[in-house]
Image (cartoon, rainbow, N blue to C red; front, side, top):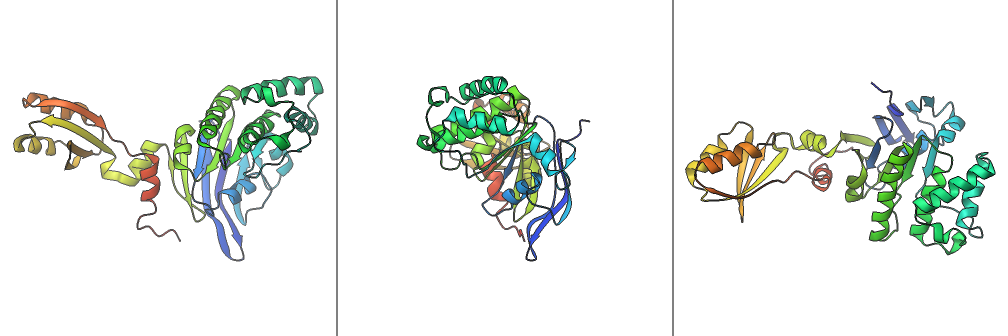
Length: 314
């Protein structure tokens, strides 16, 4: 099995006796886009700062690309590109000049830096604004330039802290598409911190739900649904006629079905696994007409909000 590129073991961070991060363990393999999802104040930024070696954990260990973030912060910073939620560029320099300055700070030869800058500016759709001073850039343009900036040194890991903050919906869609494409093309691992459910769901391979400094659950959408909804991971919506009593009883008796609900335009059947084909066959064999059958799998929105219903996060 491939060693994780980011690994946190029992990491805690306390301020004045209060836990900002509480016994966090997390493993992220190379090439994955991982979403750290949680409300503001959950401890996401504190976790990121510890990964970068900008803050020391009270206890536990953090390895990034096999390097200890606390003991070797400079080496970790060489391998990681970080896009904070509050971007800063030199406003009197153009987008191109800002990228070239970043290249100079990273000791990238000028000819290679120019080629890399041109390539990245094209990738983030800023070629036409490359000679425009960044003081005139919109928030969305600055975020896209920030994405190009963190990729200048060809990092192994990119950490994005609330990258879509303050961008309009079209800009968000564009930026998320770029992040996914650049991750695949550059072969990098991406850790994306956000409190926006749907944005995380669009591009992340896996998600960690983070509340009050604790990682409550992690996995892809299906595994999170299985952890959370247990008996009712699948909801199969059926539209058929006639749904007579004997047919309902036959469906209810199928192994793996936990409950059924009659809804306005049909039937919602809750299952431990996908039983669509079995349900379809039984309906047709009964002589009823099957008009529609589909899975209503739980989305991240339902998963996330379920974690705040009647749970003690202290």
